Every structure is written in C-alpha cells, then in structure tokens.
Length: 80
Image 1: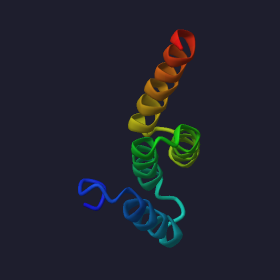
Image 2 (image 1 turned 120 degrees about the vertical axis):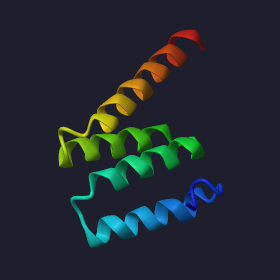
Image 3 (image 1 turned 60 degrees about the horizontal axis):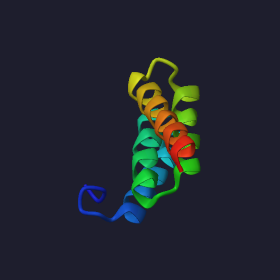
Image 4 (image 1 turned 45 degrees about the vertical axis):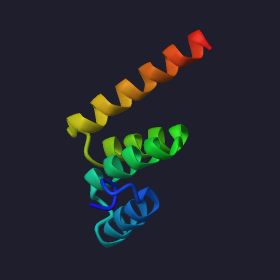
C-alpha cells in the first residue's frame, strides 16, 4: 500500500519488518527490490532479487525480474 502511494522508504521499512518477523519471506525481498528500483538503487535491487532466489529457488517472479533488470543494465551500459 505504501509503495503505491509513493512512500518507497516507508514500504521498504514495512517489508524489512516483515522479514524480521519471518526471515524466509522471499516475496518481501522481491517487493523491496521493486521499491529500490523506484529509488534508483539498482545494486540494492539486484541483491534483494538474489536473496529472494536463495530463499525460494522456485519463485519465478524473482528470476524474471532479476533477468529483466540485468538485461536493462547491460543495454544501458552498451549504449551510454
């Protein structure tokens, strides 16, 4: 909810609290990654997707989003 209202820092804090309560909550890492992307923190985004994949290797959304993020970074690097 906070993320959709534009409060990315608040959303990240809430997701981190969810992870504190349930350290295996891979989906919260995916949500943090998307919020970090909105803040322009691309390295943090990649780390969160990778953590989600470590916690839940069959979480397709984390794999797809990480792949897309890395592809965009590669294209950006080539054309800058």
